[in-house]
Length: 212
Ligand SMILES: NC(=O)c1ccc[n+]([C@@H]2O[C@H](COP(=O)([O-])OP(=O)(O)OC[C@H]3O[C@@H](n4cnc5c(N)ncnc54)[C@H](OP(=O)(O)O)[C@@H]3O)[C@@H](O)[C@H]2O)c1
Image (cartoon, rainbow, N blue to C red; front, side):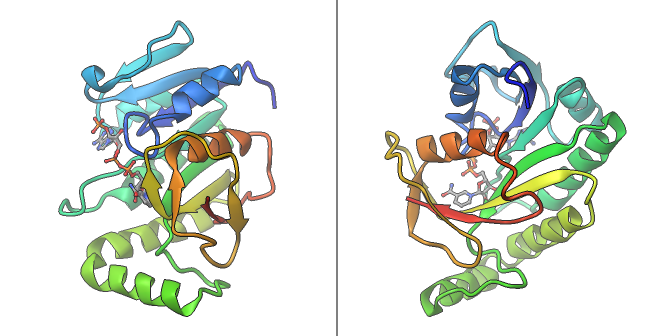
């Protein structure tokens, strides 16, 4: 891949996504970012294009990702809302297929359990609690996982995250394909890890856990 590529970013004003835009720019990429509320933007730069709109609008997704080579999705919503993760991801992937864009990097929670996981007892109990207390969200996140699995044309990676802390980069990220290796991670470390995944195809069609 080439650093002149343009990255479409969804959720770039959120807790997870906040540092991704600046890390992309530092690495020489162009960015097109979906923003609902421009006043939430913390960084302005000639290399950042803004698309104002809502991810629920498929025409907005088309405008956002057209001519991009990579899509990074860190969309999030309050726990009390009816979850739309799966439909958002499905719409993005379908439009990516239309435009022949083939690299997608998304995030989800560490409580998502998939075939092949070997979670510790503590993490299994934690996942069960999430399934119990946030059953709608967890069912929707599972649906998102199945949608991704049926999209083999796209080189997707779904990163499973623990609790996010707003802090400076630590620089040490633990990675594991079958269990969460820690309890938290800084959003700066997530940003660096995600931008590195553009060139590193090790986790294509996989859902790694990461933590500090
Ligand atoms: N926070 C954590 O500790 C944590 C832990 C594990 C996994 N995760 C996962 O990480 C992801 C992001 O979580 P987060 O904590 O970063 O969420 P967040 O801080 O609430 O950020 C959500 C982002 O999505 C955008 N967004 C929400 N609804 C939108 C819409 N209708 N159209 C366009 N953009 C919209 C928000 O834009 P606005 O700025 O306009 O609101 C914001 O940029 C979720 O999948 C979550 O499950 C989070």
